[in-house]
Image (tube, rainbow, N blue to C red; front, side, top):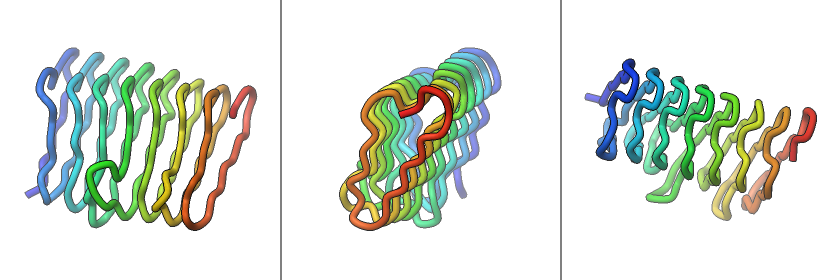
Length: 168
């Protein structure tokens, strides 16, 4: 069975790294400062939702999925360390959504058959990239986002959309 973990309280699910097994996982970090360890999301289908302020302050990697992987950074100042897809193994589909104010303040990288990276609300303040080995890449940067390097080295299609004030 897939791991389902909900971290509702402030400072909840802290400390050690959280790893998903081959069945995948659904992790929801809803409390302020929740999920401060590294996240290793592997398996059939994995979803990480960082909804609390300053949640998911460790690094997160999605690798080895069979049906897709999603990293959602919706809380203010969430996802403070490197976010990556495909670092630890082949990934078919990865979506990284940095939509919370000032979320994803470190590098965001993706190597997958299909990568979709969305940044909004002054997020993605370091490098954003689709790596070589990616078949299709879509990077979307809105209001005040993607203020450092935005790169697409995909083997197939690249679509970079800078829309909004002070993006890219």
